Each structure stands twice: as structure tokens, then as C-alpha cells.
Length: 209
Image (cartoon, rainbow, N blue to C red; front, side, top):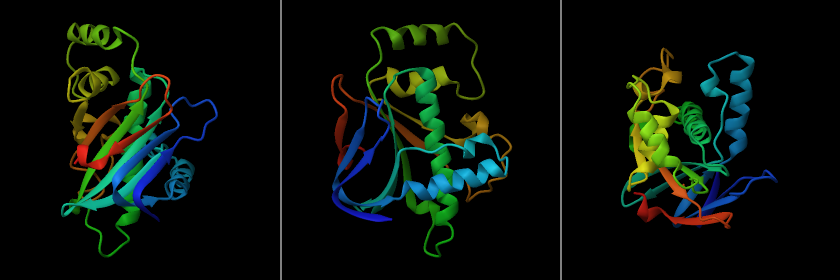
């Protein structure tokens, strides 16, 4: 775990990525080494576990502010589409499940002490994309689980640019024997729109807590 004073950088190293960096500011952070979670991914793959455990997000930071503890999970996407954003959601959930398992090895850790939030940073959608997607969903019957279109509309269509998910919203979590301390109560997901022509964005944690 790396200590970062006042700012911490989450990066996407792919040479083809258009969104390459998200910088968190205005706190002191502990950044979790992504290698730890990726090593767990290979273990779950070898064990033929559910594919929800085969994914990883780009960065995890922990910090405390105004007496509350936070875990922020960040995923950077270059292309705005319902499949890409839905995949980012699963990547964040996967990373949370695995880091939560690891943190439970620490005697002082209590998952109830943390507010869990996910952040998907992406270039803006094409003009009319969200409007057309919303129209399509209005003409379809509702689903017990959040579909990719449901998630993207809830996350991006409205002014707040955020939505909350509970485990029963997620089909991939159905039937997994995670127990009360192995799962989240809810995760707040936030959409961060990265302006066209830029590859990095800086966010103040005070605007998200």
C-alpha cells in the first residue's frame, strides 16, 4: 500500500487508451497496489470461479475525511457505450469483492466502517446516444436485474450522474456464497465525463463525499 500526500494518480497504461489518468486531490491517500488484486484474479481463474472474480479496475484508494473512511474504485474507459460502462461496473464490483476478502485478514478491519464508491471516467457519448437508449428502454418490459442499458441510463442520463446498486441488482452475484461480510450493502457509482481532447482529469474528493 502506497501513501500519497494530497494527490493520487490512477492511470491506464494501454498505448491505445484515450483516457489515461484520473487524479484524486484534497486528501491524503493510501493507494492499493493493483498487482495484489490482479494476483487474486489469476487464482480465481485457475479455480474456475464465477467470472465476476476475473476482472479488475484501474485503481483503488483508501482515505479518511471528516471522520469517515472511504474506498474509491476508479475505472478509465476511452469509449462510451453501454457494454463498456456495464463492464466497468463489473470490474469495480470484482475489485471490491477481492480487496474486501484481503482486508478481512487484518484484525482492525470492519467493512461497515467504509463508504464504498465507484467512479467510471470516460469520454462523452455521441450526441443523442443517451436519449435514444432511454427511448428503447421505455418500450421494453422491466427486468429483475439491472441490464447494461438500465445501468447506463441510471448513471448518465440524469443530472446527478450517479446511481446506487445493491447486490440483488447484479445477476452475476446471484447464488454466490459470499456471506454477510463478503458482499457490499451498496455501492454508489459515479460517471465522470472527461472532456473531448483531454486524456487526464483531476477530481476533488470533497465533491464526492
